[in-house]
Image (tube, rainbow, N blue to C red; front, side, top):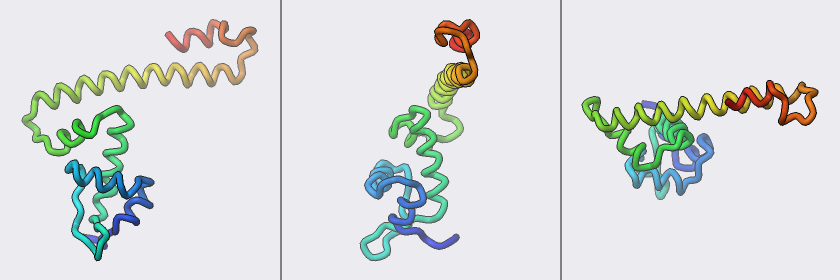
Length: 126
C-alpha cells in the first residue's frame, strides 16, 4: 500500500495549496485516507490523481466536469460525446499554438523588415 502522506507532503510534492487539496476532497475528486492528529493523510496514489486533475484543469475542464469524468462508467454516452468534442477543441488549440511556436522560431532568425510582414512568418498563423 505504501506509506501515507500528510497534507503538507502532498501540497509540497504537487505545488498545490493545502486549501486546494481540501477543496478537491470536498468536491469528491480525491479521497483522504484518514487523519494523523489534525492533518489529513493520503495514499501515494493521490499524486497521480492530482496530476490528472491539473492536466484536465489546464485543458479547460471545470471541477464539475472532472468530477463527472472521475465517477463515469464506460456506458455514459453523453460524457463520451462531451469528451470527444473537448478533444476536437484541444486539437484546434494545439494546431494554433504549434503555428505560434513555429512563427516565433522563424522570427528568431528572420531578417525581413518589418518582421511581422515576413511572408514565412505570416503563413505560420494561417
